[in-house]
Image (cartoon, rainbow, N blue to C red; front, side):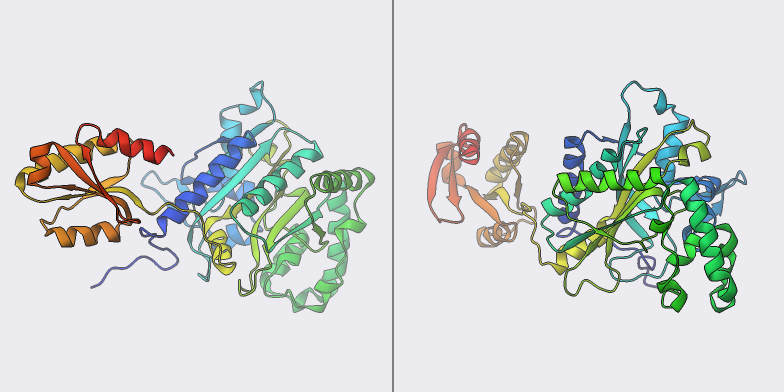
Length: 424
């Protein structure tokens, strides 16, 4: 029987893993510039965390979670997203008591959802996200959006679009909820079973339904923007002003609904407009979640964040044919001829690596010609040749693989001379 990876997962092999490393390092770098600190949470959590934090009316909780009972009869779930775990850690470790506020965190790691695999969407996927917890300032909302946009732009994406909306505060949402119930209730029998369940508990989720998105009642459903109270409207206006000040273009979409129950006020998505990217254009999304900290046992604390899938990001890069500046060449490859030369090569190879140079040598006892071919395969910038003559003279013959030029260098000084060239 041939064993393969489970459906909805993938192996990331050399040649592709360097792309992942480059993107992940870019995420680390931009968070450092924005003063966000990394947090690492467990891959599995108590199921109740996601039922309370994500919301039991969401597709994630109802249909997509990988949940199991361990030997201690505890109900656990592989994390489907990063915000609930981050906020749980914020509460558990009393980060709200730190002097430096707001608490600005980021995470990067695997998440798990049982959904239909398709292009750029997997059952195990890697998510990068940030959370700014502890401030009600609209400029924080704009900062979170700016970080996401900057990351996409710096990686080379050009065909992206920012879409924003306001979900309002509790008062605004309650007024909108009543209007939605009144709008959908007379014809709710025409909708799917999920929408029927959501009608009374969370009718906003109906607007996010994939099955009934073409129903005529969807297109003329009451807009949340018509139910924002004065405070919520002013907040949304400030967020837009900050985005304009940073020259970040945006489109207001009053139908935008985030798929998690904890969102309020600012909600946003970043989409790809690249030709051939696919029917699902969303690259990332996020929003404000005032109230989530209290739901998870903490003090009243506002928060906002976003998350993106690395897989979707890579798909967008491929659609725009962006080539990342990834180093693939080797600094040095040693060609050794003869038993004594092999011993010298082993020592020299170790010294090259200790000096910070990428280097390798032959391990299959191949002839010199085959060793040169191996150097080509590794895209070595230079080949260091050691034979009997070189050993007797205590030198190394260094060949530049691009120009073809060769020179003899002392075995004792070759590393420093190569490093000087690399430094140039």
